[in-house]
Amino acid sequence: MGVSQIRKRIIVIVGARPNFMKVAPVIEAMKRLAPDEFDVLLVHTGQHYDANMSDVFFRDLEMPQPDVFLGAGSGTHAEQTARVMIAMEALLAKEPSDLILVPGDVNSTLATTIVAAKAGRTIGHIESGLRSFDRSMPEEINRIVTDEFSRYCFVTEPSGLENLSQEGIATDRVFYVGNTMIDSLFMYVDRARARFPGLAEQLGIEADSYALVTLHRPSNVDDPASLTTFVELFEAMRSFATRIVFPIHPRTRKMLAEYGLMSRIQTNGQLVLIDPVGYLDFVALQAHARLVLTDSGGVQEETTALGVPCITLRPNTERPVTIEVGTNELVGLDPAQIMSYVEKAFAGKWKKASVPDLWDGHASERIVSVLRETL
Ligand code: UD1
Ligand code: UDP
Image 1 (cartoon, rainbow, N blue to C red):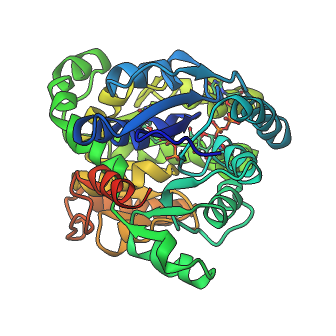
Image 2 (cartoon, rainbow, N blue to C red):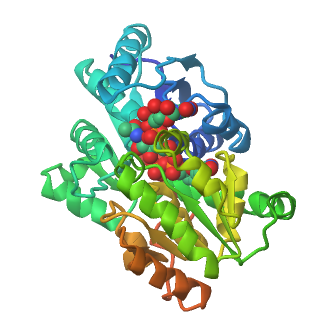
């Protein structure tokens, strides 16, 4: 169902933490470059709902408040996906669109795509084409389905072009625009850096001397053996990092408690255990870290754009450009291997790296150009 007036109606979907920084600059670019051409309806599925997993990003990224909240919340994959689907179907019965824009690879992305495709809507996928080739990873299934039904596949890195081509997706659906998450990063990095002195004092850290850690992949944190390996790794890192700042994702906090590991990490005096922080604070923490250790998708990209050494605590990545040209090293889960890279980072012996093509702060503008020309 399209709308006939000149202004194009774009429904933009957000749901989980990594969605906000991918869509904020696209909404901003639509308003700035074509204020009379687009009407945006911003829909929040409610997949993430804690203030520090959702609200803070609206403030930090200067986003408009959502027009609609679907309140899906947490649950099993089927429960969460189904709740978004049911609410989305009811929403689309009332709301026409010329385009539905979905970011990334979370369950809200998948649920919206399935409902929108069956409603005959045009879909655009921000961050299309990424593949880990690991179908035990829920996000991989979400990516494949979303790309299959997207009229606009907005690609962030060359591997995405190759992957979509391998899957038979016609080239007229594929647009290599660059990385909108990096648009947000470049837009806010100075503001973030300005917050560092206050943050450093509060956390008792010094620039360039601490490690920053994030962990939340189910394969790492839902499994007691691998979660224990990370707890041991933090203990082994004592001789290097003066501090290890660890903003704990709610999934990880839950699992640390469930496996009785919380009190053990609390006795590691080197660890600075904090709740997840807002976008500006997290960018500040990345920008001044000596080293970042992570299983996050987005953090692999942001560290590459910032030129900060990154160890990816996974056996694979859907973002190979961060390894090929960026600062990322895919190290996996072997503690001895991880320690050898930690040692390199603290000895200042990291590989030379650069920022990938089209990660230049203008990806959102390219998306808006494509839409102005073709929608
Ligand atoms: C989701 C995404 C993942 C993304 C991550 C970013 C899927 C399949 N996974 O994983 O791709 O990398 O977000 O952070 O979509 N919880 C809270 N408060 C919240 C949100 C979650 O306490 O605001 C807790 C709940 O116990 C919940 C658990 O975290 O069960 C997991 O949340 P969920 O949205 O299912 O998956 P994530 O692990 O956050
Ligand atoms: N991030 C944040 N606060 C935190 C941890 C991460 O603002 O405490 C930001 C980070 O800068 C990046 C995004 O969240 O922009 C990455 O999201 P996440 O790691 O949750 O998901 P993934 O990228 O793995 O899907």
